[in-house]
Length: 416
Image 1 (cartoon, rainbow, N blue to C red):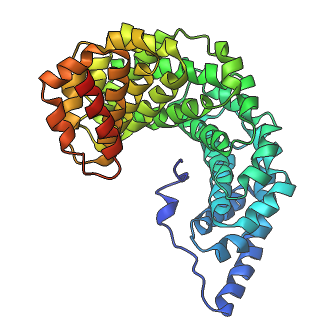
Image 2 (cartoon, rainbow, N blue to C red; image 1 turned 60 degrees about the horizontal axis):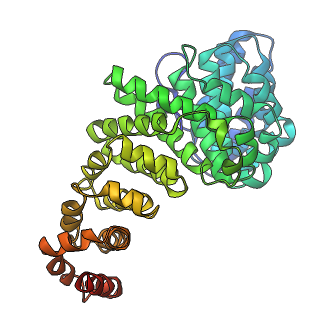
Image 3 (cartoon, helix red, strand yellow; image 1 turned 180 degrees about the horizontal axis):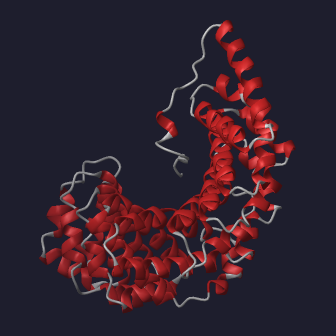
């Protein structure tokens, strides 16, 4: 996640690219690199800055040969992260980020050179542009294929996680650009599953939960569609952390009432529905994880009258339909008291409509929800029969993946 930094006039991404050619071209590149390193280490600030800009242009090359030719410069780029010039630090960070993503050899060299403690020192910078560049470089490092074994453990052992969470604290000091970068960094760390319990102990769920509430308030105040850039990684982080066993033992750490979280999530879902429907699955995935194990979150869904707004999302796509139906199954499987509150209402007509669809996964999830309703709310069977439910089921009785469940529902309906 994150964009390539632009320093000086125009975008450096559009500058001349170094190309891999014959051995002669490679030797020329190596010779040019010696010259660049010489300029980079000179005591003239303007020459250093121009050399750094040249390295930045080279770092855009998608050829690992070019990135590896830059290896002699990496130790100096790291050293200059403690420079007094925030512009120079920013340039060095974006250059390192570009080199990191292109070459395992570069990453292998940067680790013993001390990139993790250097970044941990750099994250305390007061300059927003430096922090955003640092987030970009760190996100490139975290996406490396060897990150779970060789990079993330040392990052978790540093002060970086605490500082990242501080930069995600809601409030007037929160910078959206910085927050987006570090939210994605957290997402990559959490997905690695190296030690999510450590992040939970550092208060990650509490911080991200509060940020979720803050985002919901923000989308009510503005039509800025850029907010989803932050909402997406935050939703993913919370969703993944909720799957950890440790959450059950320290769940109170979130220190949020269930209704506030659910209400905020529905505000975001409505925002996505209007501005960015492709992000609806992100919010629904979190709602699924919240309701899967927690009766209290299911109660919130019912007490806030959010079943009908949830059903209104069914036509968006098959993926969204399956997730909505799964969430409703989470509620229904909690037992008779929950099914009684699901019923009566718009649920059965909506389910009957899904039975006329051809997508096997959507229909299968509808059958599962019908099974739970029949089990815990027997009067639903009679209404189902009155609304031609058996005819709807017959459409799928020849489908191999569905026929056993269709037959079971038919027998239950007829016996009822």
